[in-house]
Image (cartoon, rainbow, N blue to C red; front, side, top):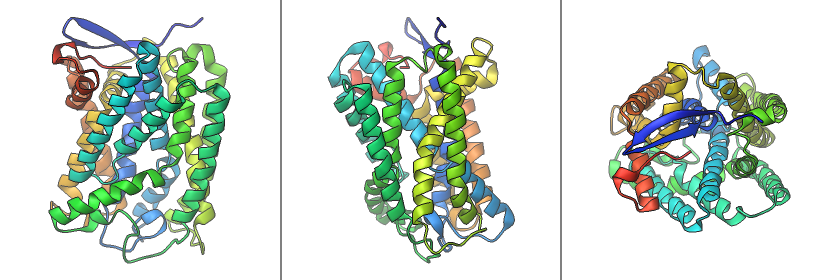
Length: 388
């Protein structure tokens, strides 16, 4: 039997923890995709086309849009949902305390509300709080029931995506996420909360992915990948292949190579295969973590440190993007194209990876992680440590 793939984490007080490498490595890498997915929402003052993306004519921007649609959009958030549900199940398996899970969901919703109101209306934390409640409700369900629920949400994802993406544009005004274009901070604050309430309908696929994460936690797949290599390999190949194939039509539209009359079928295909692509990413990264085992170097350690502090790093991205892009700050969202925005997003992600590595070297969990753990467990700061 293969031993778990773990690595030493930070020290808190007199407690030293070891964490599974695969989940943290996946979180760290996928935060880069999250940055790429989110930054496009900050671009405005132009016509809007398929999936509310700005219409661009420059080849470099069209290529960036096509690649982002193919590799990132609708793929990163399902992966994070699977990891979040995995973590919630781990907490429940270790403690068997339903109240802890409910408090964590409640505080995550509060964090999401504040994040959405002050910074980013596309905040995903509130949706993950709903995912957490689903985990609580289904924590004792059978494997078969979990897979049936996942299939039901899979179908719902396609139907909702078809409705949302029916009209491919172009349009002079946004159909949602209106707050990004508002010049007045107070007006934008109120509308950000309205935008935030729409988010769960745009990322329905995270619920299916979360049920897969629950199933993976039950069977120890991420903690003991060596025992599941065949399953992980099949999942990685099939998930990524179907994910890329399903995103290809949307990528052609986003890249300006195709102008269909309606985006209903294209949007539905992109959304449902995004779930498969996200799970494929997770399986591939888990295999990579198994290959690394204890031979990981500085880059892997930094990425894992970022993943262990994913909440802090996720929130930090919003601070940077708001400072640069929105109308009442530097307003770059009205002038730069998708390629420049993607470069800024990647640089922001790299900066958070470096900052997380420094925090790990200083044995510091990260402010957001410390806060939510203290609130969830009602513990003093000295006893706080990172969770797997």
